[in-house]
Image (cartoon, rainbow, N blue to C red; front, side):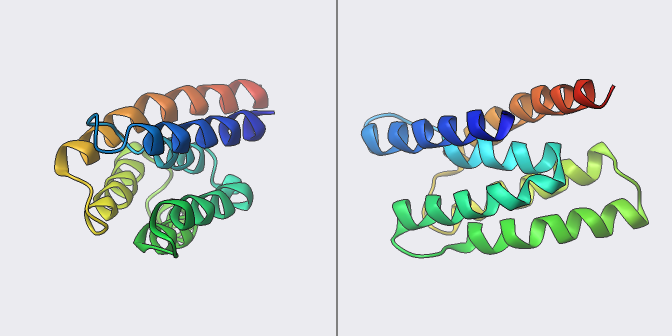
Length: 135
């Protein structure tokens, strides 16, 4: 149920970015939602990675650096979890890495910061939601 809701919100985010491109300073809504979903539960890669590929094709016409970074992210999460434990600093560093990848296709620094500021509360809410499901 969470996956369907996040995918629908990501499609809405893509629509918002396309509708208000060049008019408003805005975050990458879809990438923030998909990144938060992946960071909240690494097994979400099954549906997050195809959505990120779709995101990049819609925005850039081909696969972009975000697709590559997001493709490597679950492996990085597994490696860091095994060696350092599942912790907040590791997840924040991975989040920052993905958001900095937005600079490559030409997003402004302020749009990257907005994306980061949007991703953190969504990640927090999703983490709490997944924790409540396991209890």
